[in-house]
Structures are given as structure tokens and as C-alpha cells.
Amino acid sequence: MNRLAWRRTWFQVHKWIGLVLAILIVPLSLSGAALVWDEPLDRIANPARYAVTGDTLLTPSAYVSAAARVLKPGDRIAQLSLPDGRGPVVVAAAPAAAGASRGGPPARTVVYLDPPTARVLEVSPRNAGLVRFLHVLHGSLQLPGVGRQVVGWIGVAMMVSSFTGLWLWWPTVGKWVRGLRWRRHRNTDTNLHYLFGFWVALPLFVLSLTGAWISFPAFFGALSGEARPRGPDPRAAMRAPPVARAALTPEAAVADAAGAARGDLASIAWPTEKSADWTLGYAGGVSVKVADDSGVAVATPARAQAGLARTMRRIHDGTGMGPVWQTIIFLGGLLPAALAVTGVIMWWRARGWKAELAAKQRGKRVARG
Image (cartoon, rainbow, N blue to C red):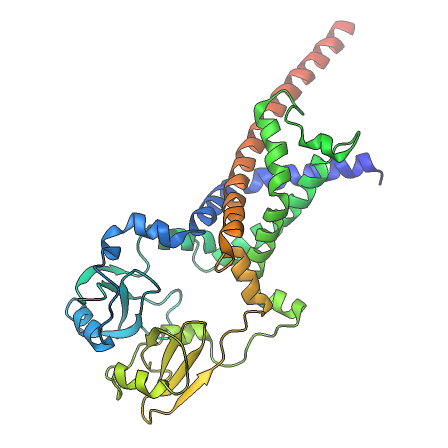
């Protein structure tokens, strides 16, 4: 197949990926761009929960008692999270009836508390609100069950689209720098499509690859040699209800864990009906398991930051990657939406002039006849 034939083939692949997936690419891309800075967005959308008066901390039990006063009867404390910087203390509670077999994210009621006073700032379901909606939209397009796989296949299609788009961008005559010119076409939307497509091609390929990796961890883990850890399904463990009454207090669990970990305490997870251990998280990713019956503490190493699956997720969402990469992936979310819109406009215009050309050719044939 010669170069011209390849170009025609890639054009058809690129065109139909864009047309078929345009309606999905726009919300997926825009939600991903917004979630690069999900905490600032949450502060804007929910200012009440961040109206703290300081960063002095009380005992964990003080926050648990304050949260218990506004929770529904029968709700059980599941986790307490301490702020990293100026923010609220967050207490999450689960209904006792939430069984381990329940699908989807576990039901939680979240209480936001002022650190120095334990005053309740806001109470809301964990799965409610703008930022949570955007997370679910970006991760599964709000499609229960199959949404994650749909998003993964969109990522695969976008990798192909990035490659074919760069191929089509490459000038057929002259040096490649000619492709950076603005006036490659008389229409503004076509020029925007060329330039945006070039600058976003590599970031979009990386974001699409990492998104597909997140959606299909078993497949990519097998390719990379990173086997998934054996043992109970962590999602089922997360859905297990907390125990009705723990033997230890949270302060006792923290004291028992003190000899096994270093660093600032970040979170406390209560024992559940599937695991009789407290789980204490510390800054840096180290966690300590404390047996509720004996108080024996065992430190577990931080999740390997060099692990490929973890690295792929950090690259995709920008966590800990610095403002430069976060800005790049923010633009990598905005520009695909612009490419989808300009691509549809280009296709619609092409339909028009092709119809006019066909009409003229039919007229000429009629005139000759």
C-alpha cells in the first residue's frame, strides 16, 4: 500500500472514530479537565464545608461524638480523615444494612467538621455533589455495570485517533514545520483542528493509554508483568459494614500504632464485619493494621510509587505530578472537546460541497445526453 492509500485509510479511520464517539468524547474530556483540580472545584461548589476556623486538632473521639449527633440512628462510623493543610475533618458513616454483596460504591454519609471546635459544617451523601458526579461521569459515563469498560474502549479508540490524526497532520509536501502554519486552510475551524490536533496528540495519547490502563487493569497488568494481588476483593471489603461496637477506642488504636509508623496521621478506618483490624493511614502512604481484640500493630509498606499501575493513575489524574503536568492534562481535556466539535463541522461542510459537486456532475451528464 503506497503513502496515498495509507493516508486515505487513516483518514477514514480518524473521521469515523471522531464522528461516532464525538458525543461521548466531549463530556469525558471536559469532566477530566475539571477533575485535574477537583479540590479547588469542590471548595467553589461547596464553600460551607470548608468554612473552618483553624487547623488545631482535637481527639478523634471528639469528632466521632460530634458526627454521631447528626447521623441517622443505626449509622456506624466507618472512617475519619484529617485535613492535609487548612480544611475540614471528615467523618464517613455507613448504614448497618449495607451488605458486602451490594454492587457499586459503598453508601456513606459524610460529615464535615471544623477542626478546632468539632462544629458540624455540612452533612451530605458521599455520592452526591458536583465533584462526585464528575468523577462518576469521567470514570463510567454514569453507566452502571458496563460504564468502566465503555470508557476503556473509548481510550483505545482515542489512542488510534491520536496516531492517525498526527499522520494526517504531517504535510505531504515540504518540511514538517510547514504544518505549524496557521493558514493551512481557508476555514478557521479547520485551522484550529490542525493546530490543536498537533499540540494535543502526544498528551492525548498518554491520557488515553493511562485511561485504558485504569479501565482494564488485569489486561495491562498481565502485559506489564504486574500481577494483581491475591486475596479478598478489596471492593467487597470496602462495602462491608463497620462493626457495631469496636473493642478499642480510636485513641487506643492510634497509641498502639505509634510504635509501628512514623509521620502525621491522615486517616483512621474502623474494623468491619469482614476485617477485625483498625487501619491507620499516615502521610507518605504507610498504613498500620491494629487488631481490635489484642491491639497488636503491624505496619504495611506504602504502595509502591514505582508500581506501573500506580504510576499510570498518577499520570492520568495528575496527583503529585506538579503544576506543569497538571496544566498539560487540563489542556489535554479541553482540546479533545474542541477537536470533536471542529471535526464534526468539517465533516458537515464536506457533505455540503460533495453534494454540490455531485449535482454539478449530474447536470453535466444530462447536458451531454
